[in-house]
Image (cartoon, rainbow, N blue to C red; front, side):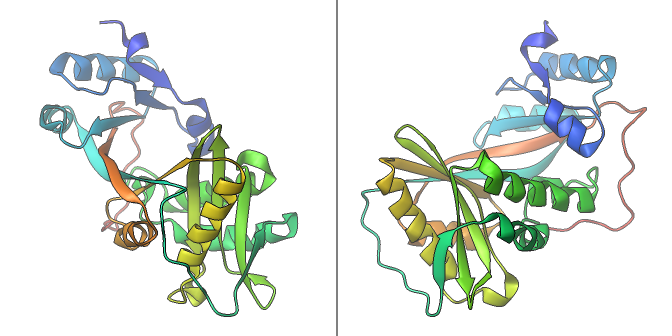
Length: 256
């Protein structure tokens, strides 16, 4: 089996986390695929291998467990048309505007603690502090041009969250959304989503998707209440096959 067709080195992830990381491109696991992936990881000094499977693929789930993969996340996609009806949202005392460079430091502070439902925080092979830094890097890069726009809610002139929007022709995607702890339960998340829909419509986007975690029930309810419908469900697995370089799990157990 040619592992070059089923495994790919992820250079950005490898550089960021400080060890070699790959992705298994096959969407269905067999014993042969797992064996070839293990051999590739050892030969290429890859410490961690990502695998994404369809949520209803029981055979891949079984082979993943037998092959040493850890289930680390349920990946849920929500979708809506920008023309779909949705209730108007209000959040008293909140203004929403495009992000500025001067916001980045504060937005990074919010991001550092806002995304701990993700797979990198639920695999003890990844350092939690580095996993936090992944999202501070993500929001900083989004403000600097990685996203097409970053919308920021502010209270008394102080940013209290963000939503990042990406467009590709008629297709749009929400990347990150977070609200500072002190500003939650005020309807700001719903207001942000509604404002992002306005932005997508103004830029001729017809269909918008967003991905969230299966363990993040609050985000799921937020999107469903704002006109999104649940679409594809997939499962993320992490395989740690290079025994000579595999990091040791921390002593403190990570819980969902």
